[in-house]
Image 1 (cartoon, rainbow, N blue to C red):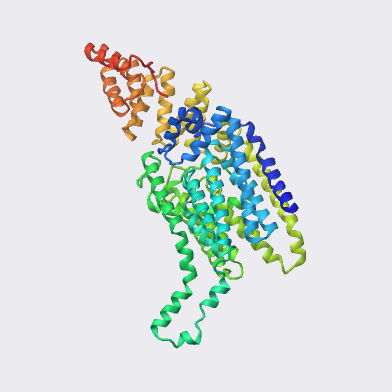
Image 2: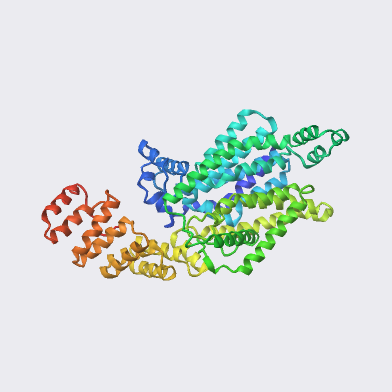
Length: 573
């Protein structure tokens, strides 16, 4: 017990050495506004109205527990970036301890379990999930997912129904935070094989050897014997049916939320072939950055059809080779196959075949999948070194050096998250031409009233991606704030070519046209904006003004009465 407490203490210590500074970080302008700083529901804290709001699809996701956790932070500490960061850090620390506890309980191997947990704690690819407030859903869903695995492990040992039900409940809570772990039924089957050993390979082989009696039996007896041989697998598969049903329900909910939130690019932008090729490439890229974590950034632009087929082919060959090696070793080193399949399987929801957003990949997507790689390495290396005592004795020192190297890189990567300017300047330095990063730098500059600098970044964004709706909208808004109404109107028109039902773009275009004295052109856009969003503050009164200018006094009075209790805006941001 004392050794376990020491191990847990060391895991907490190295986690906080890397991440303790996040407690002093600010919000960033990529999604933190959507989740906290510009979200009036979250800023209200916990009340009946905000809780109801949580259970509807929001931000192209259905993650009510994530919203509730953010509201709880507001309720306890107010809208304070330090509090949100501190909660993320606490959840990550809890995940580290849970991961160690699960592996140690299942295997009894303290050293390997501690190394997996330590790698999970400090790997640079995990910085994004901890240091980004909007990534609360990653650490929270993993927390409940690990609790589900822990409960399932208890069930596997005791077969007590209460642990099975606990695992189901924790699984639901995980998916209510984020639908990342929809592959958990698959993980449970892997754990049944190793380390839980519910169908050990040797036992399965013995069961599959037909006895002389069976060999000479009639066909009915032989069929009955075959069914008996597969009885353990049948029982294990049946256990997973409720988990699988829950996964299917949450997959449907996620797809509906993403479709409703317009977060899924069309096939026209990323064809099925492009998505499949990118998925293969990304599997290899994550592996490379697991070993050598350089060039990490908050956003990686999707290369689209510019993918190099030769590079994809090389990665595909590597994946086939590694899969073959894991399969060949399935009896001697079952942990190698389990770890490799853990990595391949848990990445499936975020590998880009069902594309969400426009990014090629994201560091945060590796938060759970890399556990599989860490397991495969942590158990395979000692098994290879056992024949040479000097190698076995050197392992703790090698492990310490590896952890120190990763901690150094992770601390440096964490420092980039202290504010928007630092984060996005680093991303530009790493990724080069990056429309999304330029747009977010523009938003940051505009919030600090540096409009000319903001316009520079918005122009860079639309130069890189001419179809980038949000950058065109932001550029139009910034230009209009500088009284460059004609240029602003041109960008709002571009927005509406791509997304005709963008109410605020209609509203801003109408205001820009009104500022130019072109009221007859402005009126239809005011009217369209109100048809799309009847609660658009200021739109009726500004429409009334435009109608008065066109000598339509009666209609103007009717619009004014609609909006007399609302304060008009001019350019919607």
